[in-house]
Image (cartoon, rainbow, N blue to C red):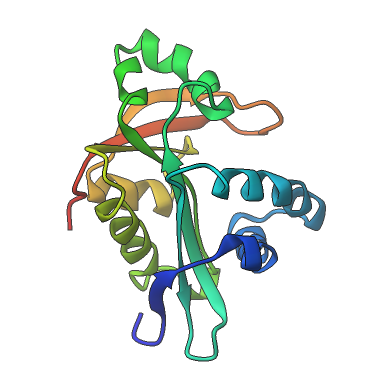
Length: 177
């Protein structure tokens, strides 16, 4: 992580760069990334949304994270609420900060960039806990989230148009270091 610097990211300006990082990190097609363009812009217009980027000295974006205060009226919350309620965790939708996206280019993964992005963002979110969803499989991302203190609140959550099930994870803040 020596060369990457974590700092504020204006997604209204750098949305295409961020989506290119997401596409490479998550294996999205150009069409799948393009569909997310308006979604990201809508999210960052939400009061309380925050975004950070990891940039190289030449300003190349190699990773990013963004999130927003959880709101039960948001689409994501409406999908996960029945699953959380079934497990006795629906109160987590109140007073939590949702990590919407966290992605790091493959060649920069494993260097602490993802950890630095998510911990810096949640340290400044002003909420007592954090939620996120991740593919429900043993992946490096889920291993990182567990090390940071996230635990499974719901498993096998199906999002419309997502080919794989997701897990909803939650952590009390601040995250473990």
